Image (cartoon, rainbow, N blue to C red):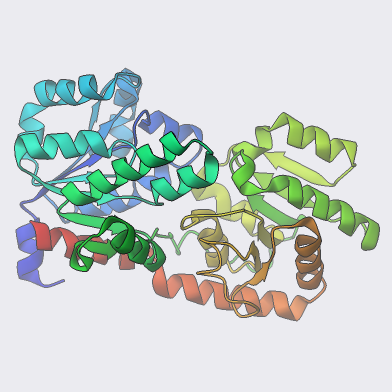
Length: 381
């Protein structure tokens, strides 16, 4: 970025609005705090100031020193939207007035930023890591919920001065479905700390498979367990490490015990420690039914792991069959076949892992994403 552009951004203040009912403590509890603040720490070197509007209440103040020099402005978690936005307008008036750009972290919570944009006349970036309306459509049979999600997303996109999505697929869908000006919507992908998530040659392997997943049907872990049952009958025990909130799923644990599967569970790992666990496993597997732009997959690829993923939206866009990953269907038979194929072919593992690392480093390194963020803010500021 040129010196003149950087100089003008040095006078700009960015205020990020968290997802509704989410605070710094929530990021910390799932191990993602240190990862999520990396981009904004870098932005503090380029901008005059970065503010976080969070919803963890007083508990979030305890994180002020940890996220400094980012300025934390917490409000209570469960306040209704009208109360939250009015409280922000009254209690943080000077901070909002002195901001140049408002930005949302997801669609849920964007209604507050949208309302405050109108009140204070600020530029607004509506950012979403995944398309809210499409996830609700996958998760719910309620036509009311789906219509409401679509209307909320359309309003957030329409009022914004710029819209940020993480994939070209989501950009094209948003243009068509919401009638957006193509010049208004930008692709800025999720970033990877490639200097942290990197291969560790020579590390002893403790598990055949690793899966990083939250709880819920989207992640399709029942199919993975059933695939492991098939493999146990076919080639013997296959060991697996499951990391994330899914590891606290009692039904999942009971099923693994009932079928005597070789599965270890780890409910919480700080994100920056995750490479140590990934690198002790031979193959990463993501059996999801759908995804947005999955950080766990990109981080495993950055570590040089051969990755197996289902051929679904959000995964197929980054995994190219037998070049930087291995695609299969969502059913247990297909998962088992893919796992067997990759586990039994060390040469394929090396090729997939090497290409995966190169792919992520060239596209999703945090410095590449930082430059995209700065270009967008420069155009607004």
